[in-house]
Image 1 (spheres, one colour):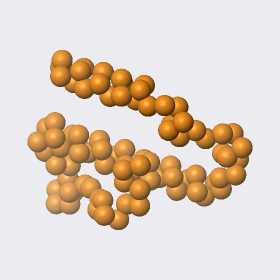
Image 2 (tube, one colour):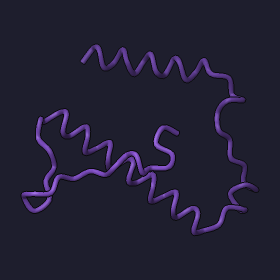
Image 3 (cartoon, helix red, strand yellow):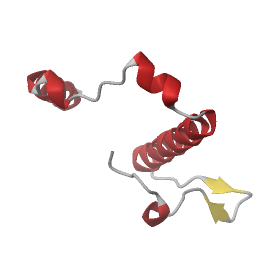
Image 4 (tube, helix red, strand yellow):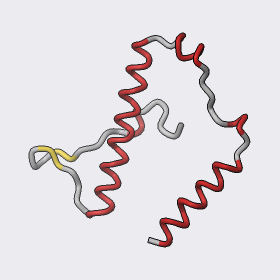
Length: 86
């Protein structure tokens, strides 16, 4: 528990030390120029990434893989993801 708390504290400190110019800043005008289909695509990709991280965390925590109908294992091919480490 203490190690996790220290890791979170270290990450927070690191993020606070990064200058604001390196943070992604989206202005209101930029949001208005983004097409709705592009927003939906980004939303779907974001949800898939979060789902993948949750499944991976579950697998590591419990030692079990998530199976679908007993035979297929949940997951997706990370090589086909366009922007995996953004």
